[in-house]
Length: 265
Image (tube, rainbow, N blue to C red; front, side, top):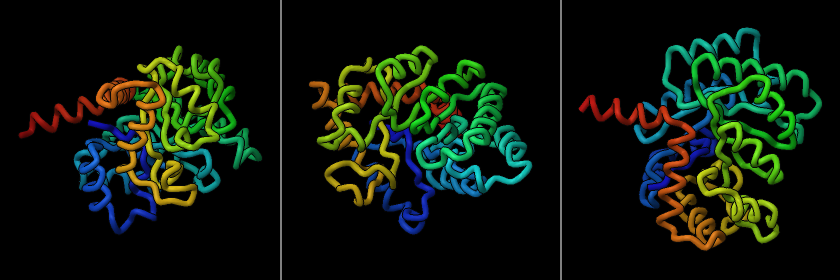
């Protein structure tokens, strides 16, 4: 069964149809969904989704594109939530020098603070790394964490290898399905299979069959996996099984939470 390693199920676009989206995902073989928070408000939203849908898991963190909305004490709030609740990672955190490059210093400060919390709580991180991969890697070397996922990866082979050496998996999704995405396709085809996890980033980054303005949902992951299998000349079942295991390896608390839930019954 598939795991969508990155989906914003709490997004406003999904607010009135989460039940239908989950049902559709299950129908298409997506048994688990990872929902990374992006700001303070979404902490509570993703926690509630986990309560409502036991096959959903969450990460808590501040996305670099939302740090301008942060208030004094928000990092302390994140620490309190990490103590109280059961996220599978700290995320979505990272750097974005494409959209928000005018506040690089603040982005790095917030990123480092969250890396330190991840290390304190022995949690992996789910990272946003757009146009900032070398800076992300530099900070990871200075402030090591328990691996995690570099989501929507689109860097060089050398950068990919650097993430892998640091214990990270690399996220691939709808972006690789476009005919012009030759660089991402080359990465997806040649990187070690054990280093790759599959994701939708729904409602963002719709795959090619939906068009750039299409409405992406976690149910698209099966077709994304099919595309990936064809790209690598692999059996679809093998791709699904390996991506599933890779995600559990990157986010081991999922197994712990599932085991705890089973023990309660």
